[in-house]
Length: 298
Image (cartoon, rainbow, N blue to C red; front, side, top):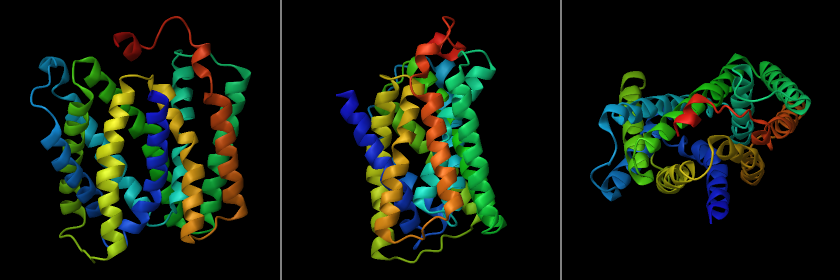
C-alpha cells in the first residue's frame, strides 16, 4: 500500500511544477503561493481533529518553524518559475537527495564509496552546466536556478527534519499536515503583502483551475500523503521521489508547448539525474551502525 501511495505522490508532484506556471498567468507569484496554501489550510484545519497528543514542551515551536521554512521555499520557487519551465524546475529539485547525501558523508553519518563520490561529482557537474547554460539567457535565469537549488539543498531537508521531529513527538500525520500548511499560509500571506502589496488578479479559467488543483490535489492530498509516508518511510527513501518527477514534468512541458531547453541544459539535466541515481540509490545499505542524531531520536 505504501508503494502505491508513494507512486501517487510522485505523480501528483510531477504535475504541480507546470500548474504553477499556469497559475501565474492570473496571479502574481507570492500571492499565487499564498492563496494556494490558504485554501489548503482552510480544508485541512477543518478536517483535522482537535488535540495533538504531543508533548508541547518539545513540539509547539516545530511546526511554525517548519511552516516558515516551507513558505520561504515556495516563495522562491513560485518567483523562479517566472523564468523557468516546470520541467527545468523539477530537474533542479532532483538535486535534493545528493545534497542530503553530501552532508551525511561530510558529517560522518554515512560512508563514502567510489560510486557515491562519482555520483556527487557527476551531479554537481550537471548543476554547473545547467547554471552555465542559464548565463546565456541572462542574469535573471541564473538567479531563478539558484533560488530553486537553495530551496532543494537547504530548505527542503530542514522542514523535512522538523516535520519528522513533530511526528516523533506525538503529532499525527493529518495534524502535522494541517498545522504545517496553516503556518505556511500565514507566512506566505505576510510575505506577499509586504513584498507585492495588494493582490493583482486576472481571473482566467486556466489560472483559477490551476490554483484549485494546486490547493486541493497538490497540497491537501499530496501533503497528507507525504506526512503519512514520512511516518512510514525513512527521509532518505522518501526524498528519492525527486528522481521520478523530472520525467513527468518534462513530458507535461512538451504537451503544453513550453520552450524546449537548449543542448547545454539537456546535458546538465542528464548529468544531474545520473549523479543522483549513482549517489543516492541504495545508499542506506552503506550507513554506519551509529545512526544520525535525529534518526537516533526517532
